[in-house]
Picture 1 (cartoon, rainbow, N blue to C red):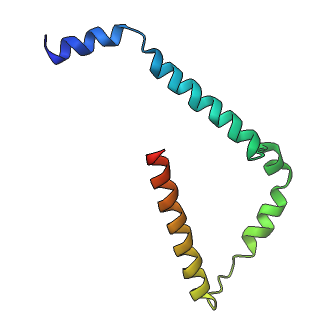
Picture 2 (picture 1 turned 45 degrees about the vertical axis):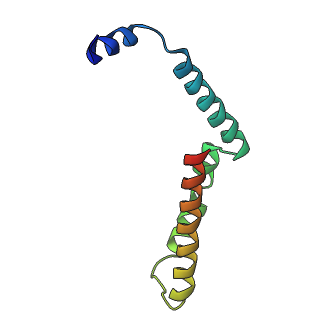
Length: 89
């Protein structure tokens, strides 16, 4: 039996573990949505606050660049650990 034949036969059968995996992923996302208090209407309703927040970035002030660099490195470190833990778990 060739690999193509095996794939063709497997493609016709439902893969319940794949469906279960997608179901678990969607359930986790729904759970995380509520836990993170996601509310898109709040973004629309409070959009003026976002405009004020964004306006405070202009003109840019780089007098505290050492602090910014330090915090950017912490963000990268957190991202690396988060990615590593996501791969392992």
